[in-house]
Amino acid sequence: MKFLRTLAAIGLVAALSAPSWAQQERVIRFGHLNNTDHPVSFGVKRFSELLATKSGGKMKVQEYPSNQLGNEMQQQSALQGGVQQMSAPATTSLAGIVKEFGLIDFPFSVSTFAQADALLDGPLGQTLIAKLPEKGLIALGYWDLGFRNTTNSKHAIKRAEDLEGLKIRVIPNPVFLDTFKAFKANPVPLPFAELYGALESKAVDGQENPFSVILSNKFFEVQKYLSATNHVYAANIVLVSKKFWDQLTPTEQKWMKEAADETRGYQRQVSRAAAQKALGDLQAKGIQFNEITPAEQARMRQIAQPVIDKFSSQYEPAIVKLYQSELVRIRKQ
Image 1 (cartoon, rainbow, N blue to C red):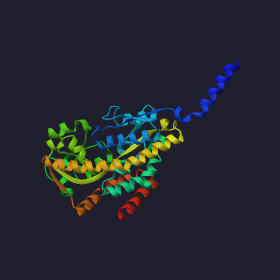
Image 2 (tube, one colour; image 1 turned 30 degrees about the vertical axis):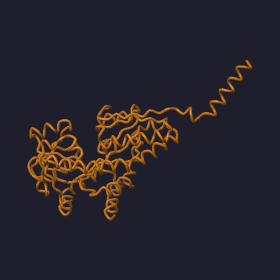
Image 3 (cartoon, one colour; image 1 turned 120 degrees about the vertical axis):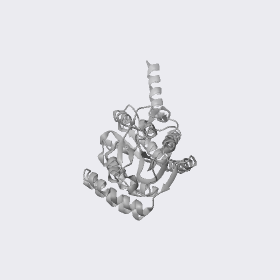
Image 4 (cartoon, rainbow, N blue to C red; image 1 turned 90 degrees about the horizontal axis):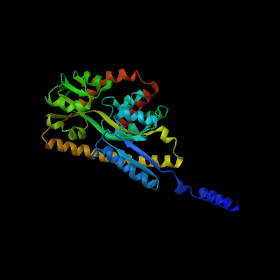
């Protein structure tokens, strides 16, 4: 009995004295929609490296690209249920659970990357993030997806009137639909998987996406004109399952926050460099590119203003007021 008591005492001392090496290993399933050569994937890889370093290898990220864990809404449900730990969807996908995320989709809100970063990293972006925990999600910040631009097979878009009558595929989002209707285009909501075929068969005349998406999906094969409408700035958001987050120690949460903060600038830089390279590649492949003058951009913003007014009335007034004051602030910078 004395021998057993000695063994028990030794075991207790060992358990108390070795919390560092006894720390539970965490495996994080990080899913997203993009291919492994996309800037979102580069962001996941950098986050993984930083988190592994900070945690001494105890927190390991497993990347699941290219819809391997389902589409955006399926992955959102998996995070809420605690089945999946992380994802990086477009902010648009959150409007179904926090409708004020639709503010980010408002047309012509920002005109530069600096303005976009100031809006999302500032009080508005943080106020939206603060609404997610009650929906079972934690957000660690915003990544770059890029400005959305318009391609078509008919003619260059240099003025608002050039959109009139064009059948433009848009994502199935009420703000996008109403925006293109404001320009008297015919917006067609189509699943992305059907888009190339619809462009090829001329079922639709054009579409709108960031440069890198236009290139990687070879839309230049079935589209002649690319116009820098820059009508919406698109962002991804880094999400964590709240059920998983609540299991973490304060130190583990700190590591994840720090890794995400350090990844954000890198991912944005990579994404924006990729967009510029994609534009050059698209022009080299024969697509005809044109920019739109700042004066015409301002006129297009005015044409789209009724859309902004319509949807603003459906959102929480305090957040809409914050959004409007933030736009005034960032446009002065």
